[in-house]
Structures are given as structure tokens and as C-alpha cells.
Length: 324
Image (cartoon, rainbow, N blue to C red; front, side, top):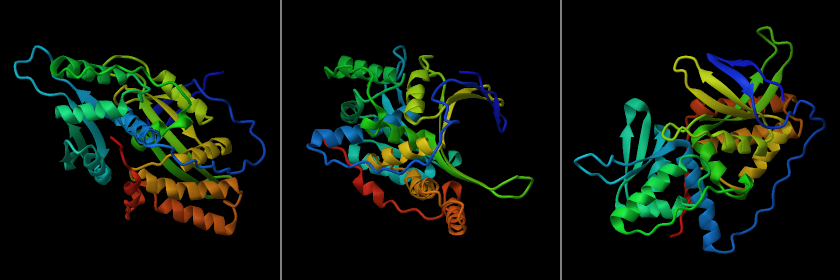
């Protein structure tokens, strides 16, 4: 597949490395909701929520362990970082794990859920062990080593999870941390030749794990292939950091995204953005987005999303549960 050169603000997009080329896509695609099957037992339901927590951790979490040669020993810390507006999700997870605390960092517009008690760390391992898909599994292995050595935990190191992304909520957790939903509406002004309306799910993640220097290529390629879009790289000029990035925006990609979230939920404020975004997607898939009423609806939906959102309803958090 040929290389693709592109720009994104002060970033470079130097490489096309993944999914299928959708440029020749033809004909409308119908939105086909997937049939929802009830969980047969608690273990099935727990796997769904555990994989969500694993995805959340692998996108925007870390495990800190003190160095062996330090004089004062501290318990390891399992940490998840959230934007400040997602504090309700952090507090909900804290209430489910029942051990830990949430620290608020207004200057960084962030809050951090931290678990450091031995019981809490064992709970975390029990939830995400066997659900990880990225190089961050090495942080989990170090935590398991610490628990086994210092507390006779006898925990097994389960391997990376291999399996279709549509089978669990791992991708939902990953997107809740590192994804974004947007609606684009280019009007016939400022030199634009025609009006253009589109929807996009964008995911971005570092290319290398900073602790192990292992690549995220395999898992990001798997995501891009599942979402039927291309995997690109970008380089942040100001820092020199390099990232994998993908954007699901074709009719086929949008259909896959809608069908996935019919089965697995988001729990951050992105759940609210997704609800508005999905309404716009359905207008596009039914080819009503360029009608006079459709254009008005698109603009209204766009005006409520992301940084423009002023109202938040967190009732969806009532559905988030873990079974121990």
C-alpha cells in the first residue's frame, strides 16, 4: 500500500500502515442493530465490565512500583487518570472497587483514581488479568510478582488476550480514554466548493510504551482493521513525540462503530457525546443529512458535543457493575 503524506495542524501524518482503502466504497449501507443476548451467568457479565476496565487502564492508566534499592518501601499504586469533568466516573469506579481514593488536580484539569492497599491491588489483578492487549501487561506482571513475593498471593500471569474486538468491552474502555467523537460540517462559504457533512471517531495512542519500548503497532492495527479504516502515524513537532492515529469516518466504519456500541457501553462523558454523534451518523446512513431538516439537526447535535457540552447526565453509570 503506498505511503500517504498529510498534515494535521502542527503535526505530520507521514505513513499509512493499516486498514483497507475505502475510497472505492459504493452504495448505501444500512444500519443493522445487533441482536442483544442476555448474559447467561455472572462470569459472562463480569468479563464484559472487566475488559472495559482493562481498556481504560491500557489507554490512560499506569502501575507505579517503588525501586528495590529505595530505603523506604511503599505499596505499588494502580492509577487511572481522568479529565476533571469525568470525576463522576472515577468516583463510581472507586465505589465498585471499594478501596482507594480519588485525588483532584484542578491545575491539570484532571483527577486520579489510586488503589494501593494489598486487598485493592488483588482486586484489580483479579479484574484485569487475562483482559490486557498491549505492552502495559508488563506493568501488571510486575505487580503480580510483587504480590506473590511479599504477600504469598500465588497469582498466575495470564497472557495477552487474543480475540475479536467485538467480543468484549475492551475497546469501549480504550475509546473512553483515548478516543473522540466529532461531527464536521463544512458550509458553502470561505471558499468551500460544496457543503460537506461527516462524522468521525478518532483514536490516538503513543507508538511505543515508554517503560518497555515495546510497540503498540499490533493492537492499533487490530483496531484499525476492525473499524475498517487506515492506521497512520503523526509526529508532534513541539515535542518530537510520535503517535498512532486512526479515524473511522466511512459509511462502513460508522456502521461497525454503531453496531459495537449497541452491545458495549461507554461510561465517561463521551457516552453523552456518542449519543449525539450516533444520531448524526444515523442521518448520514439514511441519507437525510443534507435535507433542510437534517442540516438543522446536524448543527444542533454538533453544538452540544465535547467542549461545548454544558449539561451532564450520569444516569448511565448505574449500569456499570463488577461481580466479585
